[in-house]
Each structure stands twice: as structure tokens, then as C-alpha cells.
Image (cartoon, rainbow, N blue to C red; front, side):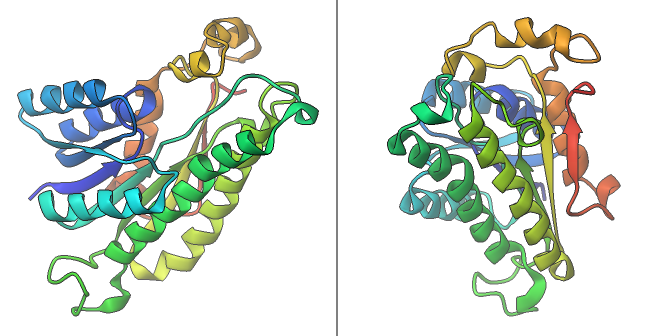
Length: 257
């Protein structure tokens, strides 16, 4: 039976690359999306055409009720969850801190931080071995698992003059990863984070800087932007048995930046 993996924000970019690679490695993949239904459906069809198992599930992780419904749908249609990738996240238009609105900050932290924490909560409730053989959801649940949170090199760099709020949200993800990893280490759950650097995905366009990856490439020691597939491979390594003794790690995939 395929291991069940839920990836939030998986219709495009790093999430989509991770879903595709995971399916090739034998995971049954739940592809979460918020608004890009066509992209999510196309990815699911591509995975199925390749012989894999995939399910598209809509939910905006800024809303707890939608998170709960998403996990229940995965429970019912794919079975016991073995892995979670907290990939859903947003940036915004470049701005200094003295120009930030409360509305912008609330959106940023609702999605990037609170959404990730609530998804991790639901995953732990399903994965933790602390229930023994009497898991509330029945046989097959409570077998341990792995969580990978998507942080960012911005958590180390601060993103002054552009995305200090985004960087701060990813700093929160780093700390959350460290704390949760220690909290559930004895319950069969490993928790790690990947911190991508400049990666050529659509997120730059959503932040009003479509050429950002190309323009910043000379600042990267490797002299290029990364690809979504390169980040996805790091995520899959952390999810897999090769990383069996790795928890609480913050893995930089940033070309040396």
C-alpha cells in the first residue's frame, strides 16, 4: 500500500515538483490547492497517467475549517497519513516595515505560520504513536510519519526593504520546526524544514518581481537560481528512510547564499 503524503499549496512551483517526484517514489499524493484548480487537476491527471495515485483537494490554509475538511477528505479517500509537506505560503509586494498594513501582516501570518501549525497539528494527531494500538481513527493510524516545513533563506537574511514580514514568518517556521521536532521525536514523527534560496518559480511574480530570480542570480555563490525540482529532491530525502535519524534539521537549499 502506498504511503499517503499531503502537500499543501501543491498545484504549482515547489509543491507541484514535490508531488510529481513523490508519486514516482510510490507515495499516494494529496495535492492541495487554494484557487488554482485547473493546475491541480492537471497535475493529478499527469500522476495518474504515469501509474501513480493522486487526489486534488481544495482548502485555503488560512481557514481552520477548511484545513479540517481537507484532512478528513484525505482520511476518507487515501487512508492513514504518513507524511505532510507544509508548502503553502505567500509573499506580497515589496514594502518597508513602515509601510506595512495590519491586513497584510494578518494574511501573511495566517497562511505562512498559523496554517502550517494547524496542518502540523492535524498530522500529528494522525501519525503519533502515543495512542498505541487504540488510535481514535482506527487500525492503521498512529504509525509515525514525517513532516517537512517550507521555510526560506529569508529567515536568515531578513529581506530588508522588500519582505521583512515574509522573512519573519519563515523565522517562525524555523522555530516551530525545532520545537515540534523535539516534542514528537519519541512518538515516531520526524520534523524538518527546507530553506530554499532564490528559486525560479511563480512566487516572485505574485510578489510583483517577476524577474527577481534572474536579477539576484549573480548574488548567489553558485551564480544561478535553483529549480523547484532541486528543492523537491531535498524534501523527498527528508521524508524518506535515508533521513531516518534526522529531525529538527533546517536544510538550506540556496546555492550557498
